[in-house]
Image (cartoon, rainbow, N blue to C red; front, side, top):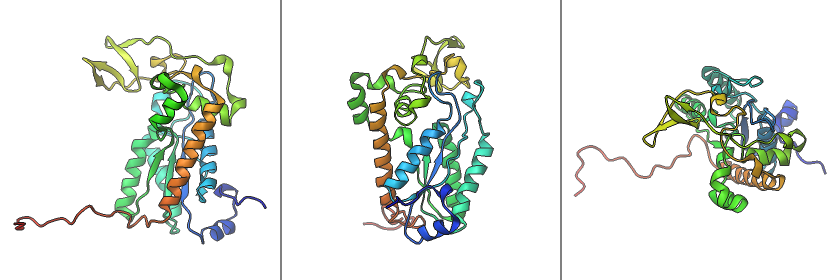
Amino acid sequence: MAEEEVAIARMSHTAFAERMKRPAVILIPLASQEEQGPHAPMGDFLLTERLAEMSARAGDGLCAPTLPFGHADFFRAMAGGIQLRAKTFCLVLEDILSSFLDHGHENLLIFNGHTGNAPLIDQVCRKIRRERGVLIPSLNIWQIIPDSLWTELYGEDAGLVRGHGGEPMTSVDMHLLPELVRHDRIRDPGPRGTVFGLPIKGVSGSRFEGLPVQIPLDCTEVDANGMLGGLASRAGAEKGRTISEHIVGHTARLMRHLVAFDPRHAVTPSSEATGEGENHA
C-alpha cells in the first residue's frame, strides 16, 4: 500500500481538500540560499525541505513547499547566495500564511531552517495574531538539539563543534545529501582579524571589556572561507542520521500535540486579573 502524500506541492487541490477533512498540522518550511563553507552546498533549504517532509510524515500532517530564500544580509559578500530584504521576507511570509488562513486552515507550524529569519518570523506572527487572532508557533530546527545529544555525539568537544559551516549541518548534509558534500574541501575556521582594534567574534561582531559590541560585519570579514564557527572536521554521516532522527521525532511529537488545540483559544491564563484597589484582606 502506497504511503499517503504529505507534500502539498505534489497533491491536487481535491486531494488536499479531502485530506483536510481530518485534523492536520501544516508545516511551513523556511530556509536560505547562502554559503555553508567550501565543502557544503549553498542551498541549505534542501535540508529543511527534506526534514520537513520526513517530519510531516512522522507527525501525520502536511508540509507546504519550502521558501528557499531568507533574510541573510550577513552572507551578501559571497556570490551565489540569494537574500531577501527584511520587508520582502515579512511580506512573503505573511502571504504564505494568509493563503492557508483565508481557507480556515489555522493549525500551522513554522519549520525554520535559517536562524536569521527568526526575528522577522516573530514580527509576522505577532501581526497575524493582532489582526486575525490566530497563534502560529515556530521551530528553529537547528536549535532544538539538546545539550545531552551534543555531548553524546561529540563528548568534551560538544561546545567547540557548533557553528556556521561546522555542525550540525555538515553531518546532516553527509547523511541526507552525501553526493553534494566535498570532503576534500573541509576546512575548520582560521585565525580571525580585528575591527576597531577589537577581536572579531563572528555574527555578533566583537566584545569590549568582555561584553558584546554589535558591529555589521560581512561573513568574509569573519572568515575568508565562510567558516564562522564550529568544526566540520568532526562531522559524520552517522551523526547526521542521529541529529535528523531527533529533529524529525521532536517535530512530529509537537505536531501531534498541537493538532488537539484551537490556535484561537490556545492560551490558558495563569490567573484572573484583579481590579485596582480591590481589598484582598
